[in-house]
Length: 212
Figure 1 (tube, rainbow, N blue to C red):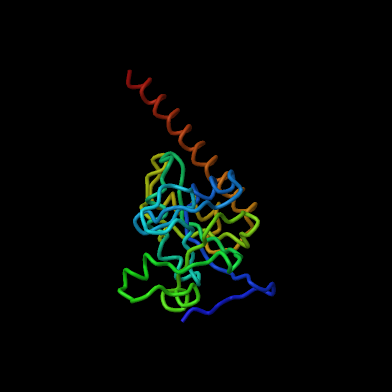
Figure 2 (figure 1 turned 30 degrees about the horizontal axis):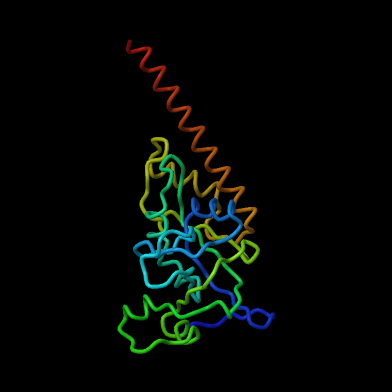
C-alpha cells in the first residue's frame, strides 16, 4: 500500500514522475511539465497527443513505482541520438485538487467503477495530474543508473564500459539534487560527449589522410 507523503501545507502531496534527461531539458525551457501522453508505457511531459483516455501528467505514489517507467521514457524520447538520454526521477509537490484517478491503468487491471484519486493511489500507486505543473514544484531530481536508463547507445563510438564511466562521473546516479544542479550535470555530460565525438572525427580524418 502506498504511503501518502503529505507536506505540512494542507492539500499538497509529494508524488513522483519518471522521464528522461532530454525531456527534462525541454521541461526546463518551458518552465513546466505539460499534460501529455502515455507513450507506450511512459508519460513524457511534453504536451503531445494523448494515446490514453486522459490528458494529464501521470504520477506515482512512490519512487519505486515510478522507476518502472524509466525504460519507456528514455526509449520513447530519444529526440537527439547524438547526445545522451538517461532516466530521470522527479519528486514533485502537487495540489491534490488537481488529481484524478489513473483510469488507463485502472481499466487495464479490470477493476470495476471509477475510483477517486485516493483509491487509485492506494490500489495501483498511480494518479493523473490535470493541468501543467510548474518547475517550481519540482522538489528534487535523481538520475537513474544506466541499467535503468533504457537502451544503451554507442555515443561517439564509446564502448559500454566507457559510457558507464563517463556517465557515472558526471551525473552522480541515485543522488537527489536540485533542478539547477541536474541541468548543469546534463550540460556538462553533453559537452563531454560532443568533445569526444569531435576528437574521434579528427582522429578518423587523420587516419584517412595517412591511408591516402
